[in-house]
Image 1 (cartoon, rainbow, N blue to C red):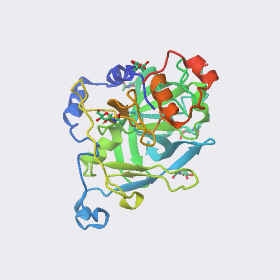
Image 2 (spheres, rainbow, N blue to C red):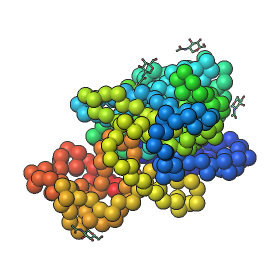
Image 3 (tube, helix red, strand yellow):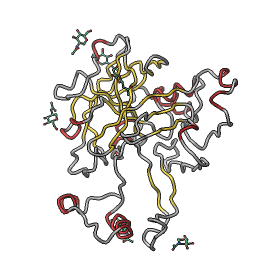
Image 4 (spheres, rainbow, N blue to C red):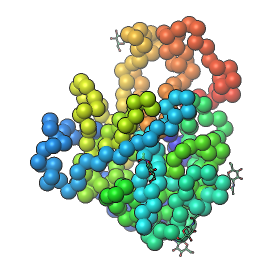
Length: 320
Ligand SMILES: *[C@@H]1O[C@H](CO)[C@@H](O)[C@H](O)[C@H]1NC(C)=O
Ligand SMILES: *[C@@H]1O[C@H](CO)[C@@H](O)[C@H](O)[C@H]1NC(C)=O
Ligand SMILES: *[C@@H]1O[C@H](CO)[C@@H](O)[C@H](O)[C@H]1NC(C)=O
Ligand SMILES: *[C@@H]1O[C@H](CO)[C@@H](O)[C@H](O)[C@H]1NC(C)=O
Ligand SMILES: *[C@@H]1O[C@H](CO)[C@@H](O)[C@H](O)[C@H]1NC(C)=O
Ligand SMILES: *[C@@H]1O[C@H](CO)[C@@H](O)[C@H](O)[C@H]1NC(C)=O
């Protein structure tokens, strides 16, 4: 999912102490970044692996399927003792948000704040809205909004590693659109390691992750933290560079430069231009502005027409 840029100010607002901000900022060059590390062949079975502080970890993923594959989600733990919380690993956002017992109307399984001995309430609540939602319907009139309360707690991987005092945003209310989600939270996996991932990298996990997002009929989807499962792809890996953030801060979005779009080798002037594309595992569809979308469809079939029900409500509001 992609958030409105207001999240930036929101996150800064919620950081409790300026001293902490500085400490975190100076610790940040360890980014989770696919161009940062090319692993040698035989990496997974190599004995050098055992000298590492942390070995790669596979997190099995379930598929949220509603006629089509929409999202993939897996378990992390929150609190002490650890409570299992299912989250959507979302490369389009950066924070951790979990449904909590403070949300009366949320139908999802909830993280119980009072059952955690390490829970620290941050005492700040704010609403954020998302740019892309669930499924194939467009976002209309901020209908994907979460009300979040800042907090800190221990966050971990199921049956393993735990990190203390990690920022977690408790979902205390949500718009109805979120009610169909079968998982209880969103774990941002931004282009710079934060939260649990920053601690894992600082403890020696290779600064790398990979996702195997299969159709429901194939199954066995997984997130690999700290490595790439070479049995899951064929051909050469192609590395792209994430451009520096204009603000000078570590980049947060998985944004890559595309030299052009073609459909079965066909293109035109509108499609064959350079543009930045965000790779967002939490967005279920491909999103372009109307003119680009129509140009792509025109190369597939002249019979593809916009869905008037969606198009009319959405007219003029599309972001590219
Ligand atoms: C997540 O944990 C729940 C509860 O233990 C379990 O039923 C579910 O299968 C787990 N999901 C995945 C994807 O591992
Ligand atoms: C949350 O945990 C507290 C303390 O362990 C317990 O009393 C309460 O029943 C739990 N709430 C739910 C909804 O399970
Ligand atoms: C939140 O408020 C409670 C009660 O006023 C206080 O004990 C606690 O220290 C506050 N937490 C933070 C992080 O400010
Ligand atoms: C929670 O969100 C719903 C849906 O947006 C809204 O109708 C309701 O007023 C909200 N509840 C609170 C307590 O803010
Ligand atoms: C696409 O644009 C590039 C230059 O950016 C040009 O070299 C190439 O011929 C164009 N391809 C087509 C099919 O128009
Ligand atoms: C396509 O649409 C976008 C967004 O509405 C606009 O910024 C852009 O100029 C359009 N491009 C062309 C070639 O019309």
